[in-house]
Length: 117
Length: 112
Image (cartoon, rainbow over all chains, first blue to last red; front, side):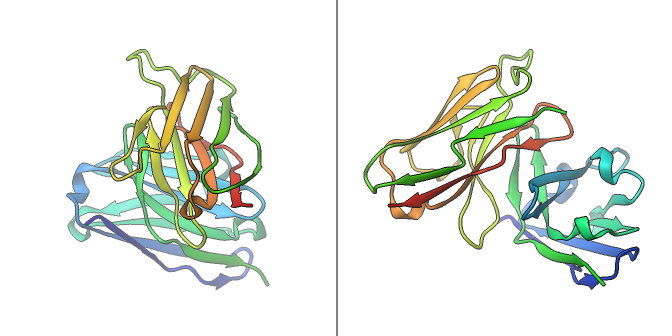
């Protein structure tokens, strides 16, 4: 059974940093691209970033490029999202998802990030 | 970026009745391979999104056959032939043709 479990979300002050983790199981992790998507009440679902199978290619939403970094560790079957210079508008539930050519086919349960003073 | 527009945004339905959701994209989602890169998701209350339909009209594994997707190019429809109470939630379309992947605003289906 495919499982994706996110962690690391918490309350953080604006301007702060946070690293989210997503542990994968139930499939051959190194064979899949992975993505991060967030959901906030004001903006619905918003794709943030993709990373390819070996971590050599990364793609980002323009509005987070330079602040967020996606990475992966295939030995640990994990994908990460490093978030810097956090703003109030980054407050959201953050999901990791498995990316296939035609869809984001499996999603984790999400982790809540709150950027507030 | 490709803009996805759904309608209606709210959909009250009586159980056993049909329902239909429209999704339009700001540019064609038809790939040169002949496939439309359009996905439908359902996000049930308190859950993460789950795939219903991919490539515009292919039901994902385990999805009941009362769900069907149709359309091509920039105009797509999700139909539920007979709504059941378990179908309550928010339905999203997503284009998977180009990054950034983009989603519609969501359609909230509720039971009358």
